[in-house]
Image (cartoon, rainbow over all chains, first blue to last red; front, side, top):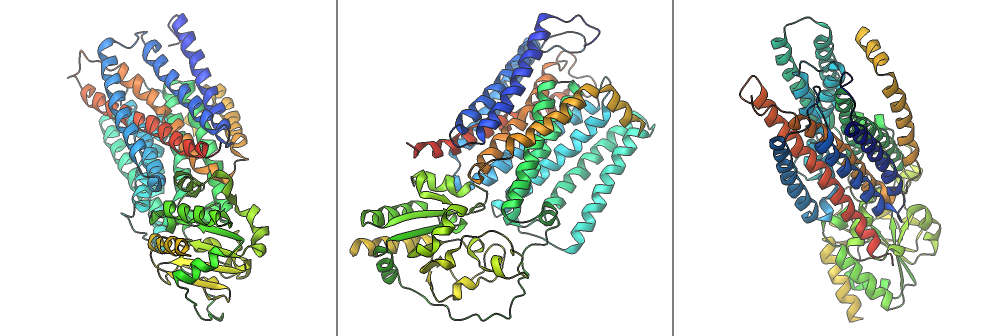
Length: 469
Length: 109
């Protein structure tokens, strides 16, 4: 475009791109505080729509032609179709399925980047082959990796882990690098390069699969966040091809923000990113030398009495609550107890649910007031004063092994100190281990009572019993 | 190696901007309560759908008159898919983020 005269349209387009990039930054900044979050999302969305419309109206190709009517119809058609599908899925999906949905949308972004790069590779005017290939590789990995993460969160794909996977992954990655170098340096004819690019696409897709496959289901949020930053980087690479500032800035910005978010999530679980990726988690827990003690059961009737005559009750919700779709009945029990003069609070672990903040969304959906949700660090000092803690479908986040058992895989992870409360009621389906597959000695503690059964049924019984009191 | 150095020199302005953008990205996110991690990830995910602009450019300048020549048709079809996927990412991403945040708002009165 340098050889052409610069028109007013070009200047306006660049100006709008600048504005859009600034709106992305402001939007994400506002998104990081609860009061302004919703506005932030809207600003970022407005920036995106502005950039899209401006591109359709003002963008000119290398010889100075703007987008023609026929092409515009196709563009608008594709956007309308994608918009309707995306909008409907986003509106209809259950809140419990939120994490896999984010993963799915991330996959589509990665696929779009990979496709753009694939097409641009065969464009003879394209001078930026290096970034094109990087966009193709990173976009494909983000796509296939996110689809695997989606499958794992949705329960369609089981964890497969073996020590070999690490080596196989390194081998595949080496293959990717080799093909990229070959495409950049060798003087092979264009037809052969075109075939090799398809091979590169295939190998990158395989790498995405084998990269996410050995990572445990519980670590998927971290992986999605990481793949999200990949998608951003892939978009930025495509931005280089077009020298498009909105794409470059937006993509890199998301890449950086996604990376730091990934690290923050790792920190909340007290794990390093390397540790998550290598996947040394799960199993282990060698502290078999400890006294197990006896598991003490409690009936719904007794539990109802305990709760109803308490002053302070804390509910610790976990993913089990969400899968059992029990958040509404839980909120009902909470209202009943409040009506009888019991103070009820919810203790939210940073990684409760399948994603940080996921539990807050689920409880908010069940109309639990915002003020009742207390973060771990705030509620822990109150634990010794709490009469009854009800743990619903949570396990690892209340496991005292994280405090005192250096051999435990979760050692060092901050936990909710429910063992300090006067009484603990644990609602569980059975004596199975939690997601991290670690023995939980809390279950055998003197002040712990187990209420076995499906979370929703147990809560329903509790509600009936409390009403009957 | 040479192509990398050449790439650096011919894109030096962009690379300066990128270095600063990375820093900006890190700063903006650093102090976020964990409650907002999910919406934030989802919002950032929607922004990464900016690749849709690439899709618009591709399909926008596709040569419809000579569509049967060479790989024009294949590229157009792939471009349309890129646009479709990009839109899914953008629209779906922003809508789902808004839905999550709407809930935080509701009970806050």
